[in-house]
Length: 121
Image (cartoon, rainbow, N blue to C red; front, side, top):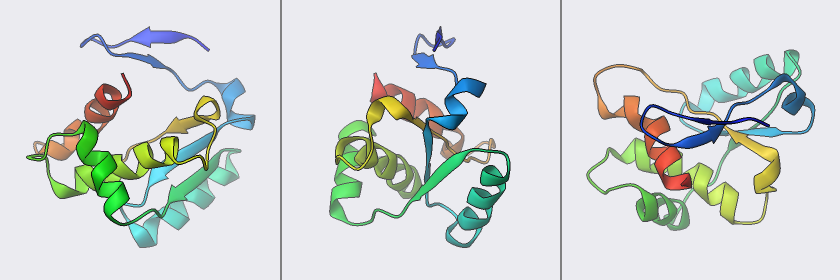
């Protein structure tokens, strides 16, 4: 696994072809109906994706531990689901990858990946 550094100094591992067989990709449940379809599309190409269905105060609290409370609620929820999954014992943190779906537009949602990388540092 090669560790890379982003323009902003965050270090991260890039997902490689070899990781496909052993890693689980954790996706937040941001589009409830669509996420199951996306999971199946990824499976057709050999990826194991788990859509995180965690809800409740523990997820929001986990998001707020690492993300400022003036971020939009969906950002706190989506990142909170992934951070909670990494810390609650359901997954081996050394065998998971995180995926974020975002608009890429002008809203704060385009910052999800940077928020998550900062939280993981």
